[in-house]
Amino acid sequence: MGKFKDGHEKVGGRAKGAKNKTPGDVKEWFLATFEELGGVKGMSDHFTIAKNKTHFYTLLAKLLPKTIEATLDVNRDIAGQFERDERADKRAKANK
Image (cartoon, rainbow, N blue to C red; front, side, top):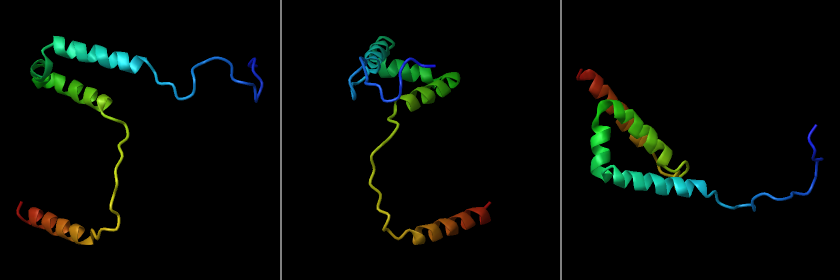
């Protein structure tokens, strides 16, 4: 079994709430490489190639925040919007 018993006192380790150093370093390395490869123009040229577009979106998804803060107005009457959308869908199908 493990060498610690339930309820043991924490010894050593990182302080609670301490930030990881590695993500900041990786971001700096990435930005330096980005500039060396031609910045926005170089990136645009590279990702314009069809086989590289998937890589661009994969990278973008990893760089975007995982959570966002948002305020929603849930008291707004949206029933009318659904009715308009349904009518537009019916018109689109009828015009095909």
